[in-house]
Image (tube, rainbow, N blue to C red):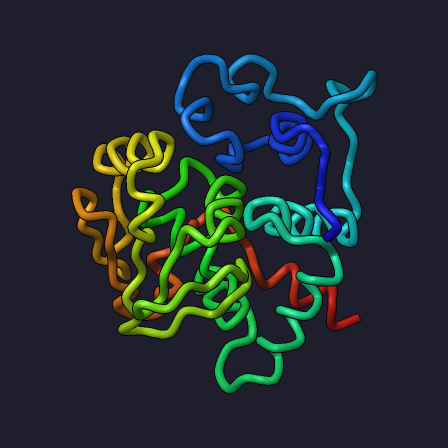
Length: 208
């Protein structure tokens, strides 16, 4: 399976904002954005004027990196969102947020999306009491998500759940951190999602 092996902190610096790819480190002073808030490379601190296409491309790359998708995976999600009724941009974000690895991350079963993806891959997550090891699996409203019994003893999962108690849990999920279970209550509304994401730029890019 293809993976993005680029350094995570370097990806955040490229987009000049925190993408929360490193879990706990992103909330400390060791975060690369806190220390060097400019793109990597010898020309990183040079101010350049970006074209409309460059702005659209950077936004697409940022969203891809946040959710940990490769180009062909992201394009397939966009095509699916475009086929659905409603606003394509909102559909796109709802499909990304509804991925099993992302839901597990929001519930605190992993410190980051990449760690949650690994947990899903290693058969540690149950959906409605059935084992699912596909990170892109689309969770439906009302689905019960829980950590498998054999994985509840893993220190990393338990520590992630403890840390998740201190951060804001999204309103569209309900979590019992002590028992490592949760419910995906509903699809998130656009107002509940990050205001730093401008999905309309992605729609403009792919509509050309």
